Length: 114
Image (cartoon, rainbow, N blue to C red):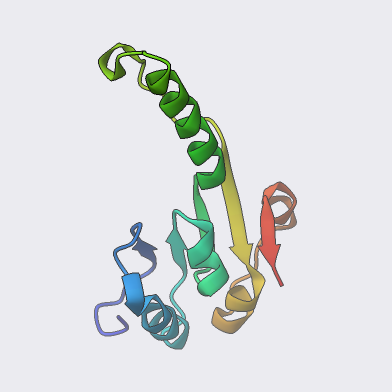
């Protein structure tokens, strides 16, 4: 990553999979900020995450299942986009790569790992 002069890394969904720990290790070693779309990645050491709140999506999906079980045709149900998003910051990773996070960002974060 250093050789390619990468300024930042976006880890897509499950693309890192079982190798997420190694991706985090290499990014921290190279002092490269990382972002992902899910909380678990931030808990594993990714610098930040911003994406749909999955527990909320699962609850809303259950409402669709309920409607279908009660006779609704899936094709007749509207597309329901995420409405709840969460921002997470991993301060341990920020310190390890030498990045400071603005206080206003920390205040707006839904969760901060210290």
